Length: 232
Image (cartoon, rainbow, N blue to C red; front, side, top):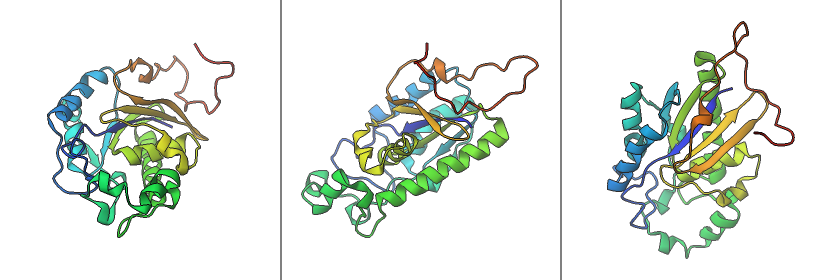
């Protein structure tokens, strides 16, 4: 039931200043981030992308803009893929937050972490996974079960979606690395997802192109069975 490309936004002005940007309005890509966004167009060349879904944060909108222009697509804004609401932590220096008692909870027991006047990481994961599943089902119905689509979001949000796809507890999601403008890929089926890659910063994406349907056969959904004994 569709292939999802998870794209983290490019490097922003906040990423290099040691500040937790969160939902601070107006945080833009820096020069490096803009260059990363331009390179996404070439990296995904040849991959048929049915739709682009995007966090409402400006840095995500700027990241998908070159790809959307190249493909003639209009990104769909999805509030449930927005950055974590860090509450009063928003805009604070990370070195200062590292001294807060909650920091240890965020690192070691994130499923219990709730940011002051903000949201909890468990609630964030629930909304993000629900959004991914909702759009995946809609895109499969509109474009077919082999459709490929892209969602641009934020590090913690993408890590939480990957944790769900890997069937690992949210308390393990800090073990997953998702760099700026990295690509992670999940193939969704009727019964379970398959994680094809994580934190890809420039590898070959030929494997993301759906195979051409064979003659006289209906296009079927991706198998829910895992390969036994490895694959070629």
